[in-house]
Amino acid sequence: MNIDEGEEEMKYEDYYNTKYKPKSSDLICTFKITPCNKRTAGAVAAESSTGTWSEISTMSEKRMLDLGAKVISIKGNLAKIAYPIELFEKGNMPQIWSSIAGNVFNMKEVKTLRLEWIDWPVDMINSFNGPKFGVQGIRKMLHVPKRPLAGTIIKPKLGLNEIEHAQVAYRAWVGGVDIVKDDENLTHQPFNHFDKRIRETLKQRDYAERITGEKKMYMPNVTAEANEMIKRAKFVKSCGGEYIMVDIITVGWSGLQTLRKADLGLVIHAHRAMHGALTRNKQHGIAMPVIADAARLIGVDQIHIGTAVGKMEETPEDVIALKNRVEGKLGSAKPVFAVCSGGLHPGHVPKLVKMLGNDIIIQCGGGIHGHPRGTKAGATALRQSIDATLKHISLKDYAKNHLELKLALNKWGTI
Ligand code: CAP
Ligand code: MG
Image (cartoon, rainbow, N blue to C red; front, top):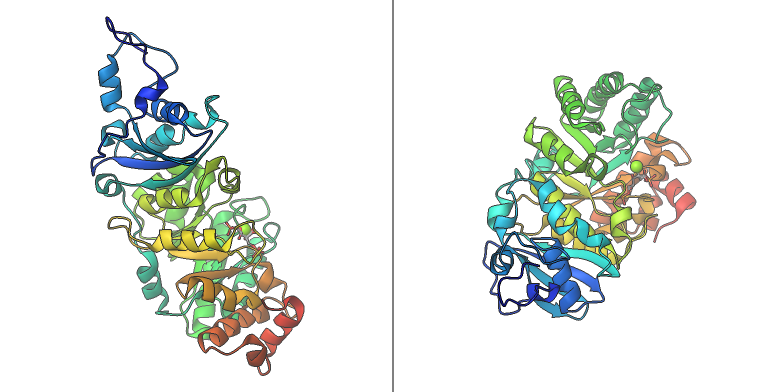
């Protein structure tokens, strides 16, 4: 640290400043730090703002600390750090994360570090596009004002050709799902070309809409290099598509911002493949609400939040907190539609609705395509389960005169 005449050598503890009154324009992070004390929290504040490990001769200590982040509180292993907004480039999510979620995770000063929560200042929130549609916009597009939406993922994840893919989608739509999506790793493979898949599947969507009289949606996966994503999204739009899905972690904040800023008028579904590498360890990494905030500010319309009852590792408390976060107040950003997916089948619906309410999209992959009578019956069983739940009839009773649901419960049970 810089040592003016007679100044003491600067220390990480200098970034600890509980007398600092955060401005409303500050961005405030809550970190779980092990061990958590003035030095370690100060080190996180320094390294994520203006400081480094040594005194320097290029700036006075006062200027470094004035502009720098301040540790404003330590409670147990949680430290709150306030960042003057001047440290960031508004509207630049990659830069914000390079600061608050960059080097700090690898510093020897801390044994483990987890970014648990961000309080975003309005100026920062307003520097992003935010969701274009959100929950109400999607419900309006689908003409489904209240009930949970039913979705499926074409399975197997990979391997079907374009025609087979489209036929499975058709069967799911006529069986009763509202939304069909590509799986997270299906993009443009030798056995399934993007453009042909989109054309064939949207054709089947149109047939399914005519047969059922219901609005149906297809979510093609546009995950790719940013320019290619824009090209693919424009192609989806040119074919009459209304939705795209993107793997937000693997494309990164820059890719997602590029896609959103293209403002193509398409609903953006955020798949979070790879999030577990960041979120699963409760001592080290980044909590999912922080990732969801960033995706929402950039402007996704729906996002996976987990299920607590399916195949992925998460607690009901985490899933409920995440649901509350994605639809809760975040400046003027629209509420984002929570997507429950991962090991779900029709027997899970009552528990999901009880835990999370009706504003959820229930997606079943294996839980539809693994139905004893096949995809169409699996989709029907999911809709029957949703109908029973909304009518407050037990699935067991409803299954007495709904064969598809009965067969699903025989195979997978209910909880
Ligand atoms: C679910 C899924 C989803 C996961 C993602 C899969 O398929 O398509 O990608 O739900 O997890 O590939 O596993 P199944 P999360 O219905 O067959 O399990 O929603 O937790 O991000
Ligand atoms: Mg998947």
